[in-house]
Amino acid sequence: MITKKIILSLLTIPLLFILSCSEDDQGPAEPSQVFTNAYSGFLKLDFTNQFPAFTETTQVDVMIDVYGKVTFGTGTLTYNADDNNGQSRIVRNGTIQLNPTGYYFDNNGEDYIGVDENATINENMIVYYWDGSQWVEAINENITNTWHGGYAFSIDDAVINGSIIQVVTAQGSAAWGLYLVVIP
Image 1 (cartoon, rainbow, N blue to C red):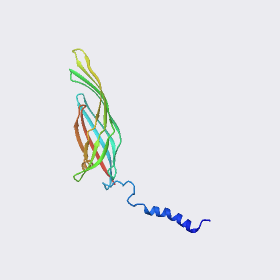
Image 2: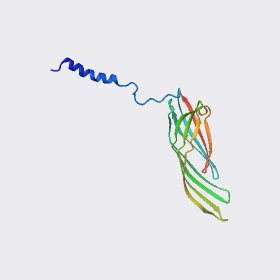
Image 3: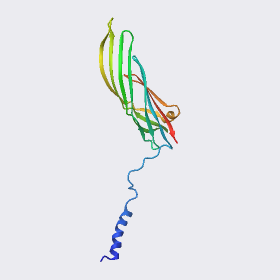
Image 4: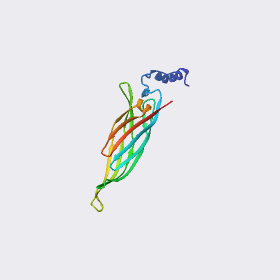
Protein backbone atom coordinates (compact mmCIF):
# COMPACT_ATOMS: atom_id res chain seq x y z
CA MET A 1 0.00 0.00 0.00
CA ILE A 2 1.31 3.40 -0.91
CA THR A 3 1.42 5.75 1.97
CA LYS A 4 0.29 9.35 1.99
CA LYS A 5 3.92 10.49 2.35
CA ILE A 6 4.97 8.76 -0.87
CA ILE A 7 2.02 10.21 -2.81
CA LEU A 8 2.74 13.66 -1.44
CA SER A 9 6.42 13.31 -2.37
CA LEU A 10 5.56 12.16 -5.90
CA LEU A 11 3.27 15.15 -6.43
CA THR A 12 5.81 17.59 -5.00
CA ILE A 13 8.66 16.67 -7.39
CA PRO A 14 6.93 17.98 -10.58
CA LEU A 15 5.84 21.10 -8.69
CA LEU A 16 9.42 21.80 -7.58
CA PHE A 17 10.64 21.25 -11.16
CA ILE A 18 8.13 23.74 -12.55
CA LEU A 19 9.02 26.32 -9.92
CA SER A 20 12.75 25.91 -10.55
CA CYS A 21 12.48 26.76 -14.27
CA SER A 22 13.94 30.17 -15.07
CA GLU A 23 11.53 32.95 -15.90
CA ASP A 24 14.16 34.33 -18.33
CA ASP A 25 13.68 31.37 -20.68
CA GLN A 26 10.35 32.40 -22.18
CA GLY A 27 11.09 31.37 -25.76
CA PRO A 28 11.42 33.75 -28.72
CA ALA A 29 10.60 37.39 -28.01
CA GLU A 30 7.69 39.05 -29.74
CA PRO A 31 8.71 41.73 -32.25
CA SER A 32 8.39 45.25 -30.93
CA GLN A 33 5.55 47.38 -32.23
CA VAL A 34 6.76 50.24 -34.45
CA PHE A 35 3.44 51.77 -35.57
CA THR A 36 0.25 52.74 -33.78
CA ASN A 37 -1.78 51.60 -36.81
CA ALA A 38 -1.23 49.28 -39.75
CA TYR A 39 -1.10 50.48 -43.38
CA SER A 40 -2.69 49.23 -46.57
CA GLY A 41 -2.11 50.31 -50.15
CA PHE A 42 -0.29 49.45 -53.34
CA LEU A 43 3.04 49.63 -55.13
CA LYS A 44 2.51 51.05 -58.63
CA LEU A 45 4.76 50.73 -61.69
CA ASP A 46 4.42 53.13 -64.64
CA PHE A 47 6.63 51.76 -67.44
CA THR A 48 7.27 53.93 -70.54
CA ASN A 49 9.44 53.95 -73.61
CA GLN A 50 9.84 56.52 -76.40
CA PHE A 51 10.76 54.39 -79.43
CA PRO A 52 8.74 52.33 -79.85
CA ALA A 53 6.32 54.43 -77.83
CA PHE A 54 4.32 52.80 -75.06
CA THR A 55 3.09 53.50 -71.54
CA GLU A 56 1.80 50.70 -69.33
CA THR A 57 0.86 50.56 -65.65
CA THR A 58 0.33 47.87 -63.05
CA GLN A 59 0.14 47.72 -59.28
CA VAL A 60 0.43 45.17 -56.48
CA ASP A 61 -1.21 45.29 -53.06
CA VAL A 62 0.85 45.96 -49.94
CA MET A 63 0.08 45.54 -46.23
CA ILE A 64 2.29 46.83 -43.40
CA ASP A 65 1.39 45.61 -39.91
CA VAL A 66 2.02 47.46 -36.63
CA TYR A 67 5.29 45.53 -36.19
CA GLY A 68 6.65 46.78 -39.52
CA LYS A 69 6.18 43.50 -41.39
CA VAL A 70 5.67 44.26 -45.09
CA THR A 71 3.64 41.89 -47.29
CA PHE A 72 3.24 42.40 -51.05
CA GLY A 73 1.02 40.76 -53.64
CA THR A 74 2.29 39.89 -57.12
CA GLY A 75 1.48 41.34 -60.53
CA THR A 76 2.22 41.36 -64.23
CA LEU A 77 2.69 44.24 -66.63
CA THR A 78 2.35 43.49 -70.36
CA TYR A 79 3.47 45.76 -73.19
CA ASN A 80 3.22 45.59 -76.97
CA ALA A 81 4.62 48.28 -79.24
CA ASP A 82 5.29 48.59 -82.97
CA ASP A 83 6.70 51.90 -84.17
CA ASN A 84 8.80 53.19 -87.08
CA ASN A 85 10.48 56.42 -88.08
CA GLY A 86 10.54 55.68 -91.82
CA GLN A 87 14.04 54.20 -91.74
CA SER A 88 13.84 51.71 -88.88
CA ARG A 89 11.03 49.85 -87.19
CA ILE A 90 11.06 48.31 -83.72
CA VAL A 91 8.55 45.80 -82.41
CA ARG A 92 8.66 45.00 -78.67
CA ASN A 93 6.39 42.53 -76.88
CA GLY A 94 7.02 41.65 -73.29
CA THR A 95 5.97 41.08 -69.72
CA ILE A 96 7.33 42.20 -66.38
CA GLN A 97 6.53 39.85 -63.49
CA LEU A 98 6.51 41.63 -60.11
CA ASN A 99 7.15 39.73 -56.91
CA PRO A 100 8.34 42.49 -54.55
CA THR A 101 9.67 42.05 -51.04
CA GLY A 102 10.02 44.73 -48.40
CA TYR A 103 11.00 45.64 -44.88
CA TYR A 104 10.60 48.53 -42.45
CA PHE A 105 13.54 50.67 -41.34
CA ASP A 106 14.11 53.86 -39.40
CA ASN A 107 16.35 56.52 -40.93
CA ASN A 108 17.17 59.29 -38.44
CA GLY A 109 13.73 59.10 -36.86
CA GLU A 110 11.82 58.86 -40.14
CA ASP A 111 9.94 55.72 -41.19
CA TYR A 112 10.79 54.04 -44.49
CA ILE A 113 9.92 50.91 -46.40
CA GLY A 114 12.78 49.29 -48.28
CA VAL A 115 11.60 47.51 -51.43
CA ASP A 116 13.27 45.05 -53.78
CA GLU A 117 10.94 45.08 -56.77
CA ASN A 118 12.13 41.56 -57.68
CA ALA A 119 10.96 41.94 -61.27
CA THR A 120 11.62 39.57 -64.17
CA ILE A 121 11.43 40.93 -67.71
CA ASN A 122 10.78 38.62 -70.68
CA GLU A 123 10.66 40.38 -74.02
CA ASN A 124 10.92 39.76 -77.73
CA MET A 125 12.39 42.64 -79.74
CA ILE A 126 12.51 42.75 -83.53
CA VAL A 127 14.34 45.53 -85.37
CA TYR A 128 13.72 46.15 -89.08
CA TYR A 129 15.30 48.54 -91.55
CA TRP A 130 13.69 49.97 -94.70
CA ASP A 131 15.57 48.91 -97.83
CA GLY A 132 13.67 51.30 -100.10
CA SER A 133 10.84 48.91 -100.91
CA GLN A 134 10.19 46.79 -97.81
CA TRP A 135 11.01 46.22 -94.14
CA VAL A 136 13.93 43.82 -93.69
CA GLU A 137 14.43 42.07 -90.35
CA ALA A 138 17.84 42.91 -88.88
CA ILE A 139 17.52 41.73 -85.26
CA ASN A 140 15.14 39.28 -83.60
CA GLU A 141 16.08 38.57 -80.02
CA ASN A 142 14.54 37.38 -76.80
CA ILE A 143 15.59 39.42 -73.79
CA THR A 144 15.44 38.23 -70.18
CA ASN A 145 16.46 40.54 -67.39
CA THR A 146 15.80 41.11 -63.70
CA TRP A 147 15.40 44.26 -61.64
CA HIS A 148 16.55 44.40 -58.02
CA GLY A 149 16.82 48.14 -57.37
CA GLY A 150 16.56 48.34 -53.62
CA TYR A 151 14.34 51.42 -53.27
CA ALA A 152 13.49 53.30 -50.06
CA PHE A 153 10.02 54.85 -49.81
CA SER A 154 9.06 57.39 -47.14
CA ILE A 155 5.96 56.23 -45.28
CA ASP A 156 4.92 59.84 -44.55
CA ASP A 157 5.09 60.72 -48.27
CA ALA A 158 3.34 57.47 -49.24
CA VAL A 159 0.38 58.34 -46.99
CA ILE A 160 0.12 61.99 -48.06
CA ASN A 161 0.68 62.00 -51.86
CA GLY A 162 2.55 58.82 -52.67
CA SER A 163 6.29 58.23 -52.44
CA ILE A 164 7.64 58.10 -56.01
CA ILE A 165 11.02 57.03 -57.39
CA GLN A 166 11.99 57.48 -61.07
CA VAL A 167 14.41 55.01 -62.69
CA VAL A 168 15.78 54.77 -66.24
CA THR A 169 16.68 51.25 -67.36
CA ALA A 170 17.86 49.65 -70.60
CA GLN A 171 14.26 48.55 -71.21
CA GLY A 172 12.62 51.95 -70.62
CA SER A 173 11.71 54.40 -67.86
CA ALA A 174 10.10 53.15 -64.67
CA ALA A 175 8.27 55.26 -62.10
CA TRP A 176 7.68 53.34 -58.86
CA GLY A 177 5.12 54.72 -56.44
CA LEU A 178 4.14 53.52 -52.96
CA TYR A 179 0.66 54.68 -51.93
CA LEU A 180 -0.62 53.95 -48.41
CA VAL A 181 -3.60 54.62 -46.16
CA VAL A 182 -3.70 54.23 -42.41
CA ILE A 183 -5.90 51.37 -41.20
CA PRO A 184 -7.83 52.72 -38.19
